[in-house]
Image 1 (tube, protein in one colour):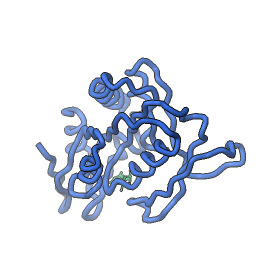
Image 2 (cartoon, rainbow, N blue to C red):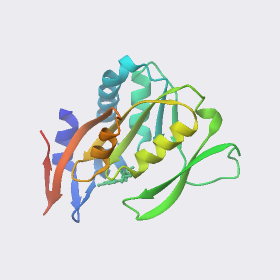
Image 3 (cartoon, rainbow, N blue to C red):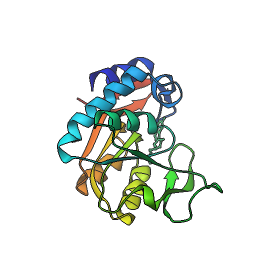
Length: 191
Ligand code: 5GP
């Protein structure tokens, strides 16, 4: 997606060998026009599959999950929570996720009622690296007896294994911007 690729090249900051910081427009400060355009793009790609729930993980996936959901005629957004709270319902679905950026494991969860059995779920997230977060969301989708109609990420780091593995498992995966490599302060995109 042209606008996102431009933002990545102009505003992305390389951290070390494998992390891309996009706090300027996606992870801390949100470019709302770009978020809207990304939502429309994802919605156009998946509209024919008639998803009826967008599923993401807090926090950075939520903005584009919402713009996608609005473009799909206001379907609901469900986000997996990373921390437990006393006001959460007890009937929950859990998956363990290893965080690439924080290098720690955490248990993500969703209240079962929010993913009704038989729903057609479209997963949306900000980044895809090794696919841990995406696999956790797919597991919860399966535990809920929902159908996975596809997955979309804003930025796929194609030099990590997540995208390749998910596609080989048959997941219909859309990446709006694929990064071939980063390092030495340089960002190289695919295509
Ligand atoms: P994965 O679970 O695919 O290994 O990593 C994806 C998750 O880790 C995303 O939800 C995102 O929050 C975070 N992540 C992975 N790589 C990067 C990166 O290069 N930059 C940023 N900002 N987040 C990343």
